[in-house]
Length: 118
Image (cartoon, rainbow, N blue to C red; front, side, top):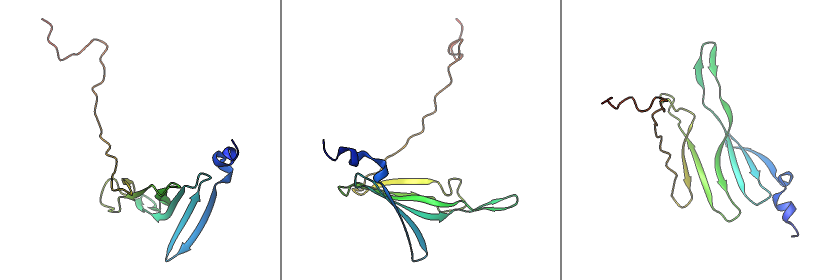
């Protein structure tokens, strides 16, 4: 198939740096036409010898060649334990995934110890 190699070749991706309005953004354009926007954000946390900066590019948007996309948001309240961590992924149609944490009891080799020996 002509063009298939260029479609899947990651060497055809491009990275663009745009600085404006006090923000630094990086745009990663994929060979498949997708665009990911990263914004440089600082989430400083206090440390024993000064603040730990945590300034780096954080993924903000991801759109495919057809306009389908996601936005990513992070916890900005420094008093919360998830400060600086991903809080939400939302599709441009308004939907978002929900992640549920399920705790599973560890398996005991001798069987379930809650049962009484009758």
